[in-house]
Length: 154
Image (cartoon, one colour):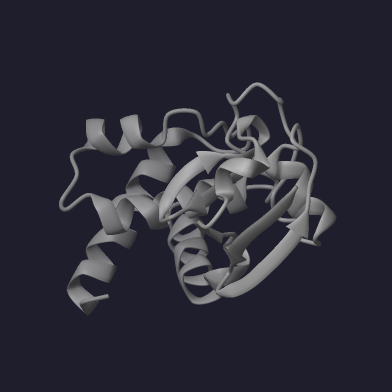
């Protein structure tokens, strides 16, 4: 099957099998920030944006991306660097393994939710597991990041 999609702004035509998962297709194409974790859609390591919304690529057939736009963390270097600084400032340092999926989810949230409550943020992050830092420091970093980009008009 020929998959026609756009990855990080570049149109791609990829030969895939009907049962290929998006995670495997992306990694084969060199997008190594998309990571394999649980293979059950529970950890968030494989998160990508599909037409702007976070999805779990380990449980999404590649064929579902036909004609759609895929974004990985490589498409957001400025936002990722900025968010990382907010995480570090709040003591929410991470080993980096879950960072790409976690950061993509926060970027998507920043475009979708306006002035989210703590509960809305936690709900949006459901399924992003981190074993390196406490979620309270992450929550503070996210709130500060969202406030900063709102004030900058981004």
